[in-house]
Length: 255
Length: 133
Length: 94
Image (spheres, rainbow over the protein chains, first blue to last red):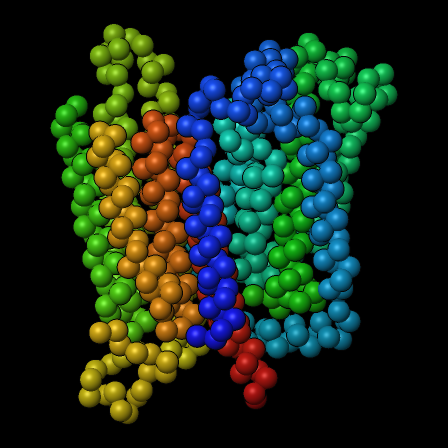
């Protein structure tokens, strides 16, 4: 083994050992006396989030409502990452693309078994990702997870049927539009709150716009809108990153 | 309900036995293709068996006495979970052979030679392949 | 019953160790992808068993389903990558 590999192995073993050692100091699972439960802020979240937002899943309530700024800019980070990858790798010249297309057609005979399995799996994957997105209020899940799985379904199409096949379903301009729409949906929800006279991303005022809701349920529904925006962005950027990296930015050929 | 639990336990243990076979095969078989054979078949079968065993346990856990007295709402959660576990078993049944097939084809196209027999070793040496003792 | 599932989970983990051996020692990349695929499939089962131990199967089964699907996509991508890599070398040589 090369010396660098041995050094890397020793580093990994030491780090892993330290992490495993540190897990021994964790408080027990669900321990009411653990330090994380003692600050006033987390007590407020634990005791009041169900009353204030009607969302049973505390994590979703904190992520999409109390810390809405944080999640919004996480979405923006994902969006900017996708844009940066497109900007760095570029799209290639059209002559280059045509040459690669010809050789790709020659070399890439597609496997029928993979295509058939993808046809079976993709609907299940997309339906399950929508379930994960919509069920985030009750169980682990939400916009990021649902978006990743929806993007993975497009990646599966690209793996089985070739990148052009997937691009005919979700083109790069379409994906960019979708990503921008997601960020717009999130930021727009916050701006509408501002126009109605509240702070940015203070959802409870939205009960004036949403039919048949009170201030609590307005927060509940606004969280779903925001999660859908996150899912749009993550889906589109996942697919853009895959398409750009697998084809070296030429958007043809690919895996 | 004890019958269902025993059935579930038998299925889980049977799955572990098949996975033992797969593990031994993956370690001891001489070349890539036979290892793939052990992994693909044993892995798929043992996963399906263990998930079926877990479904048996889930159905046995339902408080049947209350259900028989008319409280059908207790059935919803276990049935939903059982359907999801069966769904995983079905998906594994479809996806595991497909990924095995894709790996096999990639291995063949990247030039891994099968280990045919001891006599053939000199004529068709398997590149980078060393039979594990 | 909880004890049974703890034992089953431990047995599953111990049986994964030979696969880990193939993951580390495997003579070439395809063997390692194979080992990762097997471990991924077994992790699905392990997640469901952990759900049985904590009596929260309804929650863990979602993770397991997502993991099974993404594991399939991962191994398919790895297989396609090596397939393509080989073709690219041939194209460069010819």
